[in-house]
Amino acid sequence: MKRIIFVWLGLFILAFSAFSSVRQVLDEWLNKDLSYQKLLTEQVSAERAMAEYEGFFLPYLSIGTGSSGFVFDESGLKTGEIALNADFLHILGARVGISLPYGYTRAGDQTGWGFDSFVLTASRELFPQEETKKLELQAASLKAAFSLNQRRWTVFTDLVQSLFDYRHTTQLYAAMLEKVEIYRRFWAQENERVTKESYWKQVLTLEKMVQETQSLLIDYKQWQVYSSSEIEAFYEEIMTLIPSHAAQCDTGAFRARLDLLALEVEVKSAKKTGDFWYLPYLPNPQFSLSARFDIESPSLSLIQRISWSLSVKMDIPLLDRGERELEALKRKRNRDLKVLEYAQAVASLEDQMEKLSLKQRATLIEIELKGLEVGQSLERLQRDERLQKLGYLTEKEYRISYLDHQETELEYEKVQQKQIIGQLELLKACDATFGGL
Image (cartoon, rainbow, N blue to C red; front, side, top):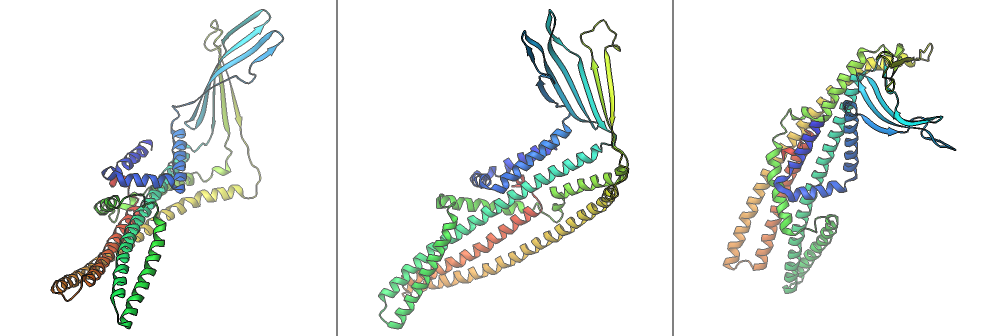
């Protein structure tokens, strides 16, 4: 599991190496995203829980003063102990502890430091169900990684959409400002009352649109720190790289989603738990073994230097109000419920992927339609250019025609951007890693 996590992190680091500028912006957004930071903490917590369970060879080590600590009286230090303790977890379902105490004693005129008995303790339930616990931790780790990756895609999609909207709004704003200026000149130069009023109405309409567009720009302050050339560089990088990687989400790619893998693990766990549905009816005693090895008596034989004790603790319920029956029923039913949950999740994702695919096809048709409009607009612009050269149109009238064509091109770009957002939704739906970019 740890190796998989490191591979994920490595892929994410390589994700935007081809366009570090966008990666830098994304990092800034992720650092400020509260949900992402919370999920990052949850993932670390899930990884630690898994490492704690699997890493029994890495014990908890501590140095303590024992149960009595250091005892002083009127003569000074009477007794004291420093113990090195090692605690191993989940060794065949058991918890194993080792203690090596080094202490001080004073008995009459005899004082000194020395090692005390070496102590080994172990405790284990009769039915620990270690494999089930391990599967549950694996599922939790997969879910945490999935949630983190999904949030990363959400933030990146929001970033791209925000960039598209900002770029479109600023370009539209510039075009409207120029139109306002041109119509003001028409209005100032016109003497016929009806036509003059028509121009003024057009000026007011455009100025209203300018104010509304300017108010929209307030929502994009995070992009205003970048120059127009940087914005265009971001835009070109996104428009080039996203389509080239959306192909990794074919019809069956979603089956590798980490949440589905987590569900598969939960199904295995539920099946194992269901196989032992009868455990609630049985006592589950806990055995504790304590063994002490006398270090300070080398004259004794090895067997004589070892002392041990075994304790057994258990509760045997004689009467309850159906709790054991309910627990046994849950164990049996949860197995079927998890299988059903997995099947429904797969079916739901199949429908989602199909809808996204159809949405992409519809967007491609929309792009083609907008492309035809751009072609027609270009023909009108070329016609007006010829008329302007022949003297039938003024420079201002031709400029209006040019700005109208520019707005048509902006609408065409907006549909292309819609396709990019759809591809990002597809990448998120199949839980693609950032290493694919």
